[in-house]
Structures are given as structure tokens and as C-alpha cells.
Length: 174
Length: 135
Image (cartoon, rainbow over all chains, first blue to last red; front, side, top):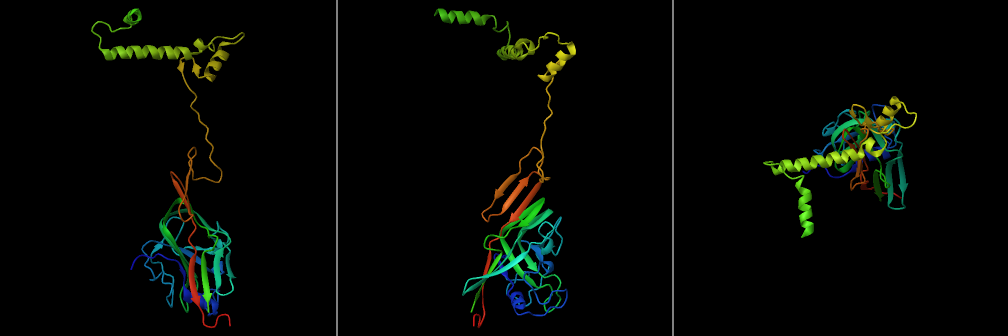
């Protein structure tokens, strides 16, 4: 299997949020897509394999693991908390529904992620996940974004700015 | 014909000395050219080196320093002022940061010792089907 090459929501985590599945561990139950105080963003390198953990979008138990993770100066394992990832402030996640059949659920941030003082090599993407739950899935993953190519920082700022169409769009059909 | 003869006569005084190598001759001619060029720019040659009325020796020396000449030799003020951009501590003073934007709209700013990157990832697009949605 080739290295990973696409982005996606972890569908079972989305369904758990939509259907209010109770969570054990942490203070967030059920899951809330916009709860940045309970969401981390970690970085992924080139060697992740498509549809295999930690980028298995269709897995029944998509648990975050540090496999294929990028870490470095200013960026430790597990990543950064989204509520402090906008230069120390909250990125403020947004979830909007547009359309009238099919409906489109768009996930984005009001502010882009910006972390200073990093030296990182080979960043090909990122994973947004919940670091606190232990059950029914430990550290359930919400969304993975593939950047299309590798990026590096040297004693500099790493940032992610959502495009005009958001970070992710989920078309809901009957 | 008469013109050619005059040129040869004028060049004779600056010609090679007996037994002198042609390269040495070129060197002497270049040296003379350089000396004339320096003389034309010297304060004395330009008139700036003369004392003006009421000017003391110290004032004269200070004025010579201000235009790049001073007693005991020629010096130039090499002090160069550079301004470091605010809020950009990683960019070396006096050097411009190189800023590029790749095909994904990602901004990469790079200087000799720092590299920033701000990624704008393509929107992840998926379709999720529910039985009964919209009923």
C-alpha cells in the first residue's frame, strides 16, 4: 500500500458525536466537534499508510497513536491543544450546515493555528483527536488532513490556515 | 602620414626602457594612470583641501575626515546602520527574507537561519449516507 495521500473524517468518531455516545475519561461526554479545549492536533510524516492506523478513516475504533508522528523542537509528542494553538489562544472551531439536500457539514477554524519556535521536518499532514477519552475508544481521532507535500520549519512558526471552503466538508445524504 | 609620425614621437617617451619586458611597461602605464586618477580626486586637486578663512588646523582635519580624507592616510567611515524589522526577530538584519507560495497556497518564509511555514490544506471532502436522513 502506498503512503497516505488523502484527508478525511474518522467516520465512526463523527457518528459517535452525532449519536451522543457516552465517553469515559476526561470531561467531555459525548464528543463535541467544536470543543477545542478537548482536541489536540498532532503532525504526521510521509510514512503513514493509507487507510491504516493512524490514518484509517473507516476504522471502527480509530484510536490515536504516535506512529508516524512528527515531533521536534517546540512540538512534543501528542501535539498541541487547539484551544491554545492560535499563538496561545483558541482557534475557535466552527461547524456549519449548508445546502438543502444534500446537506454539507463544514468544519473550520476562525483563527489559524500558529505555533512559534518550532524546528520540524517532513510534515505531510495532521490529525485532530480527543486526547482524554479512554472508552469506548481511547483517544478517538476526528479528522486527518493531508497536506499534499512535505513541509519543514527551522526555528520558525508552523501554521495551518483553513482555506475559504474550510478544513473539511462532509456531505450528508439520505 | 604626418599624423602617424607624430603619434610615434609622443609615445617614445613612455616606451620601454632598454631590455624592459612589455608586461612591465603595461604596469608602469597603468600605475601612471592610477596616480593621475587619484590626484584628480584628492582634496587638494578638487579645492576642498585648502584652508578656508579662519579655519583652524583641527577644523581642517575634521573637515577632511568628513569627506573621507585625514592626515596620515586615507580612511573611510565603514559604519553601516541596519534596521531589524520589528516582530521579525528571526530575519538577519540587513538580509531580506525569501517568501514563496506553493501551488497549495502555502506560504513559506525563509531566511538564512529561519524557516516559517503556514499550510493551507485542501479541504477534506467526504460523503456520509444516513438511512432516513431528512424524514
